[in-house]
Image (cartoon, rainbow, N blue to C red; front, side, top):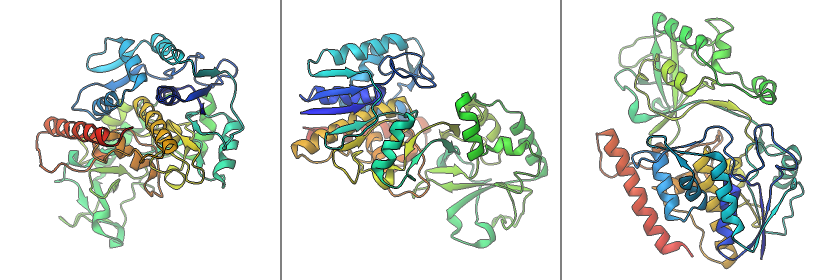
Length: 436
């Protein structure tokens, strides 16, 4: 059987390998070499566009836990990364060229592999297909995807998201539950109140903070669509105080105090293990987000599960159109993988390519869907992209998306290690029982 894979990035390369080793003939379409993207430098498979780091290898991190899960699933791209590893402390950093060469070499070992250098535009839904065209999907293919999903409203062309903070890193002596004018349930929001002096210090840090560079093709489109909080603040000290930080209608129920400005935190999940900074879309660099948002009372020691970002990023409204197997709900022949599905990060993209290919195979042979437990990073991200969410945004691996441990562990590193060990045990058991 022939299967089309569209896109030779991290997700498409891994999906191709998983299908090839299961005996399928794979046609991998990659337009680079014929038509480049605004960000890529080469025509190499699995090119790392930004950093050459795939984050931590430590088991006490979510990124390390995800790598461990992928190793259990025979992840080819991750093996190539280890082969091309360069010194980077506890992180997995690679020589980009050597890693890309290793990926092509691994795929080329299969006689049933064909690399087609052309822009794939017309989606043939009669052939099993995995679309892994990435955050810079070509305009013509984006039109075809929009036609395929039907309404033209479920494919987004930019990312404008606020940071997400780990709930257990908040200083609950300073943070308080309240809703504006007592409308709604008090637990819906946490609040960080600022007096005039605190607000002024935060404001001055915000407008002077270092910002991430945008590519020329991103600037007009993105900034017209979603204004970063630091850009809004430049319009005057009162702009954000009358916007996302307005204090009206909010009183601290513990003290009766009212504030000059208020930052609201909204739950990202039912458990309250992760909170979104409401209205804080930002283009600040990651180190600056840590430094500047620590001016907010209660966030002095905040752990960032996801940083705020504003950049060009084509992604689907996946909860509406994809299942947890990465399959299109309206067509069982079409799967998606990579950042276009709403996973964020290199290793997360590799994971989605691997899982989508396994599920396409399981579907073809009539086996059960492959959806690991929610206690694993793979399983939690699969549920993130498929669970109903009116404010769906891309997500990276973090322990905040996992259910709480049965035992409460106060030491943070030990707690994170426990999450990882549970994920490893649950993934091993699930693979043994479900993978064909």
